[in-house]
Length: 434
Image: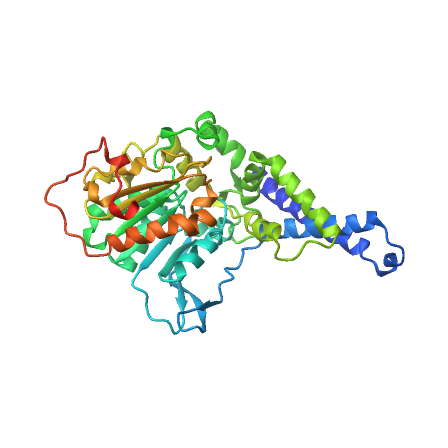
């Protein structure tokens, strides 16, 4: 009951700040005040507008905003977002461009479930939609999932990915961004042993913590410093009475957001101060750079407690993926069983979330995979966000990934004997990565 009260208190605090912003905007915008211009009232209205929008976005799932796409015929075609697999904790959705021929590249984009919605990858989807059939995992907000649906931890997450891959078939190319990279690698290894014919053609891992111990960051230091008991006590709460998931133990999105923003508090504080000043001067707009970024950044979702805790314990503390000791329902998932799926890793040289070295460790784990099916790329000057969105992704990384996909689109021939050397695999690059 204590945790439910705390959860509702956070929502009350958010709702109160949204109300205060709306009230300030309404009061300062009273028509009579316009007769005598007052900078203080202009500032109050600007503060209210920015504050209301900020706290309102925290509980709203962003829209994909991908409604039309201009094809080679020069015409705009409608984009229908279709659910192809529906599950309790997440769906598999497809961006179907009406009237366009089916594209030869079929891509499964595995979105992170680390506090933000899958719409965080909106720009990634748009860039791939140009000449690919794009599918993406659309994870649900845990607060909206009834307790009767049961648990959802890292093993359940991995099995969800297995089911999605099976549904799409073996001609699929999987791209995992950040958090899901280790579990996507595990899902591929699981298929390699349980259902080899359902394995995807290729697997691209972007900025994921395959081996967190390979390069320390603030994220890994926090995970190692805190005990599991401390995390459970400080981070886990029960969903309040307002939502369908009432009583479910979660890591609340609002608490996650507070953690995100505290890591760069000065930068965020300056961004909002500057936005208030721009609004007061009439220089801000509904879709300016600040609003485009923070409308997405502030939209957070709850994670199930068991998923968060098992991720910290098994992926970061015990490093089960990095040490190849991960298991599902007590059965070891051997990453070395991957022998036909081409694997590529992408890292950002300035990534402070998953530092260079964490993701490329996947290649060394694929001991059964020939060197010719391994590739790696480190993007100079790119941070964590830049390796899957923005200029670095569009101009450099996306072309390399698509070249890698094209080079490995043919049906694989299972090798009779592995040619890989686990000691040198992490440094290998195939032709598509050069």
